Image 1: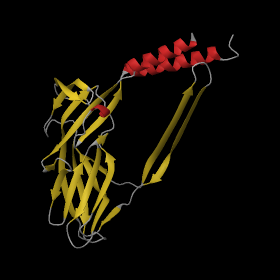
Image 2 (image 1 turned 90 degrees about the vertical axis):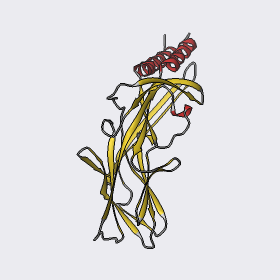
Image 3 (image 1 turned 180 degrees about the horizontal axis):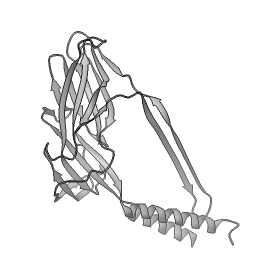
Image 4 (image 1 turned 45 degrees about the horizontal axis):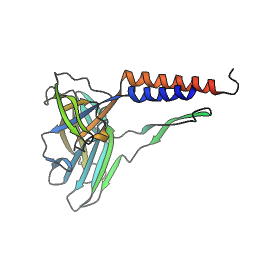
Length: 258
């Protein structure tokens, strides 16, 4: 009886624990290398911008083209969205680590442990040194922390994944109506004291948003595409049911249960 209850709960969780995903594509007026990202170049440096990953991580490569060092001041560089500016660098960063282990045997002996650690850690260097004819890679911010509310009417479409055909809804945007648009502002200099700083500002926006049940594992990699995930109500309900079933089963299996 207890074994059947636990098996049924696991089956219910499998059927109901669903997530929905959003895949966003970033565009720019900059030229784009399909393998590397969007590229800006002047007589001193070359910048390569990439945005693929979870929650739209903003990665910048800084290539030094000249015969003397370049210095990048990340505290005086920022991501600008509307009238809000967020520096690439700050003094400290929040640290949160969660670890959970759950083990159960079908009749008894259920163990669960949970730990949470939070605090602050020092971040990477405020000023980066880029030697002549070399480059550095920096990834300081994630641009989108939650699901995006589409502000246009989407269209239904189907596409092929590694596991077969899937369906979803696609939304198209331009620079004027995109729900995610921003500029990257970079401060650099050829002298470490920044007596003569130089600036680069480039604009980006989300040009396409796809909402689907297809998981990242099912999709082929696409450059400059980020992913957001949200657990559905059914998934949360399934997790609650499974937890309840396990607790009931554990109580029933206990030698002290009468």
